[in-house]
Image (cartoon, rainbow, N blue to C red):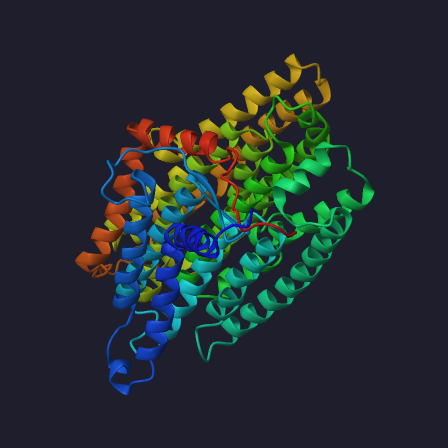
Length: 543
């Protein structure tokens, strides 16, 4: 019996409509980019700060993603109740699930906060605001695709879509040699990492004849794990490690952060880490499969030691190198590297609970790291310096900024009752539970690896106290030269909007440190539901 042509057309149309509705937040970003480029053609808009337009459209995309999280994206009239979602989009290239939506909310919300920060600090100015906003939204679009990739081709496309605008953002400070040098280094390292990653993808796709991640995982589960696949997987992880700034692929991070503006450095420190961790989580958890599968232990014997080694090395190097820094942006760059190591530790468990702990950490990390970089941006505007020695006795000149910076740094350290403590506690809890589970299954080697990782994570937390407290010691205890010489110290005039922005970010960390159950439950539920079997796309018929 031959199917009716009309029926085929209707079925295809319905599936395409589902895909577009599921992909609508990204489509809104695309429309925002085109709209800003069109406005850029008219000279009148050179005198208007178009970051407001970008902020408004980003908020629209965020609100639609929020509707996807709370309700049924196919029927806006349905009751707003969180429910598991899992649907393949565009012939299986992307996947729409709770994990995707959570990362969309994370990335879109963070981009909106960065745009709001840029409007306060004046970087960019009105004339360059459209260009800056287009690059920022373009990078965010690529990161959203990274988080929803379900095919090796989309993994590569997502990383490159996120990387290329980031290169331009790093060198956005025109006429500053250090900024141009940072962008050049970023491009060179990024190009090398992209080439290695693409070669790894070609090895995997060539071996299995497909780049569809569930099929790759199935082939590995069937026993097709040989040296070619191990090499391809390693090369693919190198590309992800570059975006994550994991050691030894971190070389670009300190120089780029120092040369770029604090606003751009803050964006790269959080957004690129979030997208890379989401991609890493999706990749390793799909490959490992559920713990009940027989091949889980087989894959774990390769993945767990590899991830644990790089996580431990990344956290340790980041914390040790940060202590010697005198430039605040370089110090925060190494701090970013260290926190990437902590979050990688959560993924070493290869469980959905580990993914949930990483999502919780990411949300908390957003507020504490954005707050720290925001204070650096404000101090740059007020003092024309980003060097720690110029902030001696700053508490006498800008007490509120020092107070909020103390909240951000102590939260990064993991001091209770701030939210950073709960973030690290959840990561360490997952590591401990995983070590115990591996021991119960008779895998003493994997169990000892996880216990060793737990000890290394605890020691690194102690080491990090040295440089976080060093910053506060310089700003609070050390005296300004004017005070030593008996001259009056002039207080800095901090605008009310600046104090409000920093104060709200600090308040969020305090509140989340006390009332963390809601966010923790949402993150854990996302981790558990985010990797369920998707509804297959009827359009997917080829590799």
